[in-house]
Picture 1 (spheres, rainbow, N blue to C red):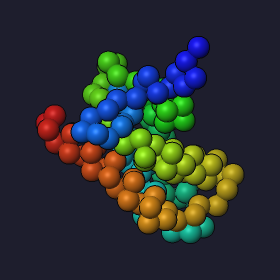
Picture 2 (picture 1 turned 45 degrees about the vertical axis):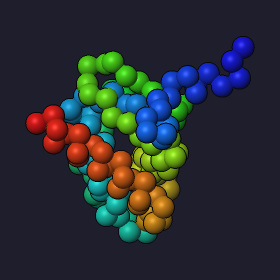
Picture 3 (picture 1 turned 135 degrees about the vertical axis):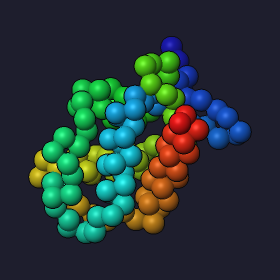
Picture 4 (picture 1 turned 30 degrees about the vertical axis):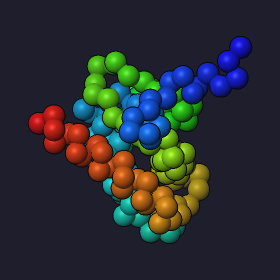
Length: 137
């Protein structure tokens, strides 16, 4: 039995280990919007006041394409969308930001502004999303 089957789903390139997300254009746009909004929020912001009515788009698809792969650290490649890589060092941070947004959206916890390390990880991933999108256009 493999002690860590999740490691099989990780990709390595240029000596950096990354996780692949296969994102449809709608889910990629929702993810980019959520992370951009998260970067603008200050402590104790009411997240619900800053998000659109359906911030995740298709919630089941968002969960399948973004939330579960980040939570489980499992790559998803070869779907209907484009593959985007997330540096493994950033996966937990991005997941925590997404979870914080979700918790605040449903009213569970007050928002805590991103730390410099969180902001750096989110900005790094947003840059990848935007750069790859510009190559696709």
